Length: 68
Image 1 (cartoon, helix red, strand yellow):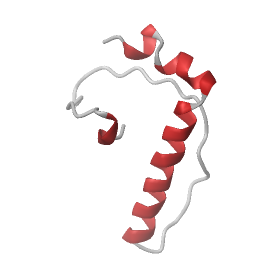
Image 2 (image 1 turned 90 degrees about the horizontal axis):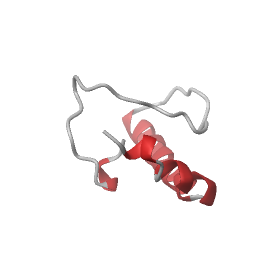
Image 3 (image 1 turned 45 degrees about the vertical axis):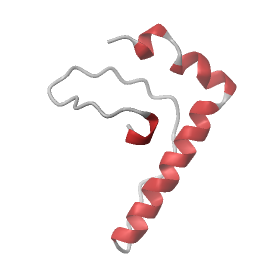
Image 4 (image 1 turned 90 degrees about the vertical axis):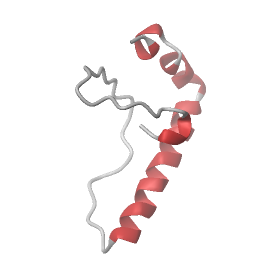
């Protein structure tokens, strides 16, 4: 969960429900922290783009996905 989407709560100790909706990339080894951070940032952008797709909107606005 990325804090730039408004999610700033601490969920430590809470029960989480997770819906896997896709696959981003294979496991990778990195040559340093900068390369890791760059890859994480790319993952975040790819995830946001995928969640913005029309079919995904039904999932992200579903009661199951938004209820607590």
